[in-house]
Length: 517
Image (tube, rainbow, N blue to C red; front, side):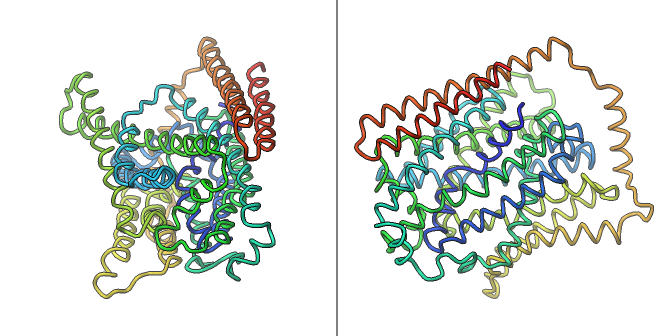
């Protein structure tokens, strides 16, 4: 697919309700450091564009899991799949909590029933269009949410009494690059973490392997990096300005800062459109995760170990049942987020504990000839256990707790150090592992047996891409019409809404023209 579609989709994969709840809470409480934190994603994307994205494309594998199996063995692949299954459900639980928090705060409904209802809707939702459907949806959410945030900015500054009034009525350290528990050590560790995350997350790897060349894969990550230079400033200004309007939020109430400022300044229709975009961006990512984990359970656990002779009908029943099981587990995790410190604590701690151990070894295997499957498993398990020890055991034994920066540093540096030790001190002195030699033979066999794409297949791919681009153009035009209708019925900033609608309408011409080419 076109690299710019992949780049926008990658960008939107980072962009969900969690952006507004987690980073919005930090922006309200600490100010500019919320932007600094998100700039680490730009750094991670630049490194990925230069070194990792083209390397993933050059493997010839469609997914990270396929590469892990070929390079490190099926046992390593299955172990990683099982761990990723658990971690994915936890991550999507935090995402569900974020969107439930927004809907609860905006509509005034209790958080628990909102979480349950939205979670059940997510489980029920069925994706029918594959990766292209995700791409199209991501782009539309990007347009809707970006338009809403651009409309918010002048309204929120007007509500605050102007830029100078905002600057004069926030804490003195509000515009410092680092603030509070988010020190330079944390920023450095978070930047390293995002190199692993953007360069090795299985969902994001698919964006790099779904384009035509390694150069296009780099462009996907470069586009993501470019968007993350300016967008964090636009996103984080509304909750920052809200600090000068209503400085009294404390504790978990700071997670409501974004939606409270939206309710105060946005036209009602646009607030509904923004909430819808937030919900369905969250729903799409959660649904993708649930489909993956249910497929893993059905194929690798049930069919692979419990009932190898299961019929297709039986497997489909197990897949649907397991989707509900994992979905209900996701809902329970979302309900528990407030009791473990809120979404900021949950998200950052989960990333610190699991990011380095799970994401770094496969990235290392892209470049290393010495890394073995056995060493990969040992390094991952040791790193996970040490991280869990410092996070969950030691604080209860002697009340010693790592700072936010040290927790993140431990999470990213421990697996890195262990990989370096194995690479240069433990591995074979001749420099090549048996697993790497097996991988070379696999690549040679794959190259010999690769099938050329037929003319019919090429036409089918072209038709699918044309249809996807036309769908994007049509949907953008539809959103523009909705905004024009809103501009006529609202009394707030109708001129600005009209201008945004015309800009989106003009933007619809780009994918339409691309479809004609």
